[in-house]
Image (tube, rainbow, N blue to C red):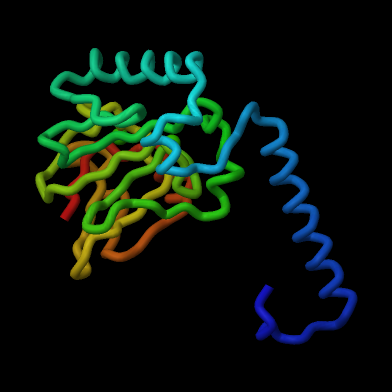
Length: 199
Ligand SMILES: [Ca+2]
Ligand SMILES: [Ca+2]
């Protein structure tokens, strides 16, 4: 909590502290309920040392399914598929992180610099689709991301605008200007994005 918080009557401050403690307890409760949730750590991913054989097989099964359904993709790591020479990269959560929204709630805006990213879950929860090229995408379904986006992180430079539509030539949903992000695009816009002009 910031020390600059406007001073309040003691009763209110105690209430606020209790509310925070309740929230923290709820978050930890969720984490405890999820199986084998581990903090996200890209170094461990690339090293692959934290994945059991079963977890790796489960993940590979998902990757294989994506490669079958969305032609032109190439697996570039244990949990990533790239299209368009790497301009489009889909990153899956590791097994055990599928219910890790509570962890993501800590705020992991992790879109690579100069990219604009769409996320399936609130608070930048994976799967994540990272876009580099400014090439207009008329069907996010080409990359398994049609009607999926729930949060976003535009980490491009120079105020670059990312525009998102419900469908090609359909109603606009939102425009973001780099750098910016949203932990939740809202009930009327979530799981609707189908076309995007990255920049
Ligand atoms: Ca979603
Ligand atoms: Ca749509």
